Length: 539
Image (spheres, rainbow, N blue to C red):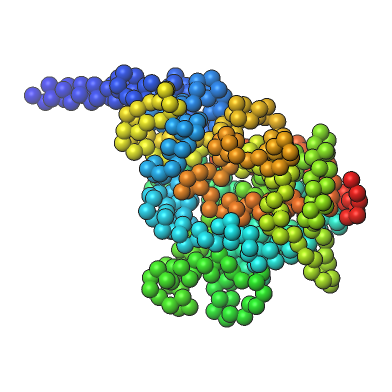
């Protein structure tokens, strides 16, 4: 009796395996209609996992879309979508939730806006901060204006004037100023980082931050394997212990900034707008109100970590993305073939009097341009937009999970009946290289964002395909801060300096979720020369 039962059981399991991994993917699944990226894609995920591990995902997926069309099957339950209608407008406008891929972005064991998987909890968290990052708030913020004045006029420009005879590492410079801006806005300038002055701290911090990026693949793409390795004491084979130390250092540092902001809140002795912890105080107040507590009541331990989780996420995003984009922008601006762009931008800045001036600590403050003025300048806007298009800091996949009976793809060639729990991705890298929307897409050409009269032209198809900040309800909450941050840095530098490339051997982009430069074997990214131009020079 035992033998026939065993044979039947084995036969059943064999048949089930054949059905699940062979017959269903080829003959039954709605995904069978989508061209596979690799012959093995319908059966297993090894090909896409290998591609991601090598960090050449973005260029590989783009080439596949060029060859196979707007829908490509990456694995048994995963597809890539490269279109607007039937693509990003459908996926990222609601109904497609985030999956466990985002769980690694929890901080202190607490979810934040970015790591929240479902729409409801995300919306609650977003409402707490949406006003503080709104465009109207950013443009009219006295605190941010004063912070920017100190960072541009008292720290960055004097530093660059002092280093004219030596090459400057641009990636470190821009990472530093980006960190000082975001921490200044979050915690107040007197509680923030000071990376523009303390460059050694900046270098150490960037090293710690970069340590985690190469190893995030394991818990993000293979969480089961990572958990198994951890249970058996083998996790360090996948993720070295020093990565955990680096992560702990970063988390402790930001928690310390939160505690400094809390002490300042308790003493209430900060009178200057630039020293007010704008984002921290907003979060603190809204969390207390949501629980019916007095806004000045002491924080609980859980509230402390809830605030810290959110602000760690914002600090990392604000520092990393702006630093990356500004490095590529400076690289393009400093190439010999783009010298005319530098000149046109400088003419525009001076004609509109949107100038930042280097100020020493014993001099009076310099009146910086209003943010609304910077936002109105066509060439300045075009330079930033084109850099975001060609060198988006996050060009990689933005995974979502399909609802039941989904339909994706352009009208007339869409695929219907896609089952629930299929991972769908869109890539800013591929969207931004659509030659029908962006002619000569691999060329850095800021004037594509200007109309025939030289004014800002950001509408139409360009706006629909532009995806540097994502789209929908979960798009980057700090996009307006990022834009004014970058425009301020660009105006400050190229209103005062002409830049040229000294060494750009390290400007090879990593092809993963983020696209920071790979760096040279010597440890350099982008070395630039800054040559001062006279403020009264006429063009």
